[in-house]
Length: 296
Image (tube, rainbow, N blue to C red; front, top):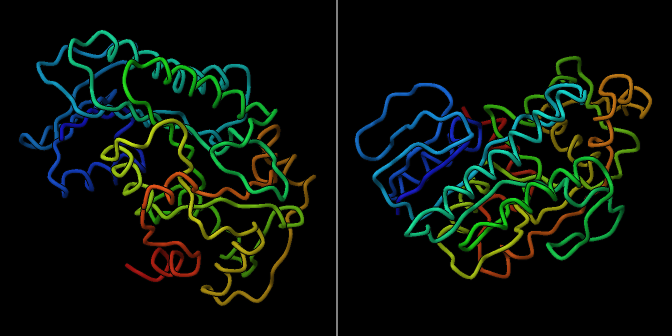
């Protein structure tokens, strides 16, 4: 199949492109910077996210993975505008492009996040669970609302905490281990929805190819753990004896308004993926961490 991807140069995008090409697909990437195309399998088109350049190709799948890092900077008014435009603005551009095509793609897949659900305590969270009341919940709602306007099948990727060697949550989680301490947040009893990068990209391709899947899809592992269990699992591999909490007040001082993302509880279940027969390679945290921390 032919894929058009926005946000293809990020952590998930790079891995997804390799996965797609290895499975016989061709990919065109919309990028803000110049890149050299690689034959017919991987092409790049420069864009500014406000319009899609003219292309004499028909795409089977359009994927939007664009979005500025939610934890990268303090949530000033200016930063919130960047977060909005990089998500909702970019999605509006791609939806306008899709709806203007004579031949529509088979599916539009748009990134979102488990931040949609907010704090759910000990409740099991599925795709039918309600929206939260925090800033990130409302941001996800607007993001998904823009994507739903596409005149084709729409899949909304409510992704959890992606584990990868190259970036994302895992390298940041390892910082305290350099000092011999396994640090967890608050009391550590809150649900910590995670997914191995390999399962993330396989699940995205699965959603593209499976015509029965539409609407929100939880991209998380079925091996649900708490934040403290997550930290202890890393500590076991790193042979760390000391486990210590980072108090809520310290998180507020370090991260400002963003601190609550480290403390909200989300025991998220990938119900839609499991019901449609998706097979996770890493359904348990231990093997996932060993693959990422012990392999070269």
